[in-house]
Length: 357
Image 1 (tube, rainbow, N blue to C red):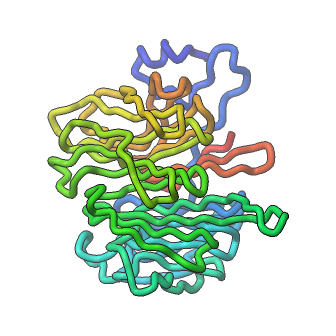
Image 2: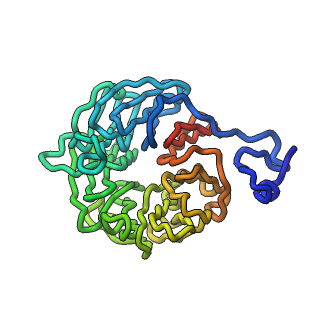
Image 3: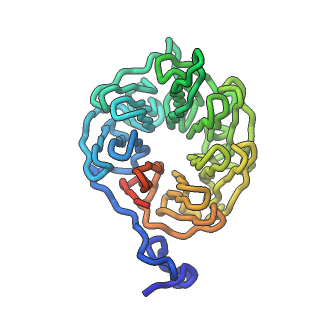
């Protein structure tokens, strides 16, 4: 029987997998992919193309798929490393971010960033010229172009930023990872949880004002000079908040999760920009103090998903309203992967899941 979304919500039914009146055949639903059991949430998943992907764990295990997630193989194990972030350029080359020591128990690896050129089988520490940052929570890979001697050449720009608990730092390469600059941003932010560059010069950091989660405020910083200078474009004004993850659908429209540690505030919020991150507007989600937010992913300017500690939520009107979605708890990262006319949406947290559109 077909039901309207309003009828389903009134009945207390999770509606993400229900067909709509007039919508034709039933919509695709989220599927849980086979993955080795792991206590807690996994933090990141990265795809180089529709078939080649990787995810990591806090135990230092790296898994690879060559069939779009239908099966996974452990290709590396590095006890003492906490794989927090991944960014793969192609089926061979990628970057692996480690959370670093003095935050999570059992993490002994002080190297913040590794590079692999054989699909994750072996890792080499990135040469930072004697400088370093405490750890990495996010990696952003930007494919661009430059004019060189009258020809257009591909330009690969990589940023790695962190970390949860602080201190804040940023790694930047404009030559595909050969050379890196290291920026200490502890004067600008307490923690950095995500990074996104829209072009070589324009980028955003999703962060917090301090390192104490009970007193810090959510913070978004923006640069227009490649990271030399940063300006505050959003500050939540409420204690106990971080900006955890972000998702951009194009150069103008983006969304970010406002993660709250204030047990007395049940209203969950996201932030939205329509001008490339210059200005941000808060949008209300559900009212549930337990639904602390993690990852966020939008497939276009209207349809997107948010992972929370209690499960997933979906919007189809650009964040104006949300309904429950069959996404496992603590989905920390969403990745949108093109596959010909189809798009795969991957969510990773306590499970590894996929939605094919």
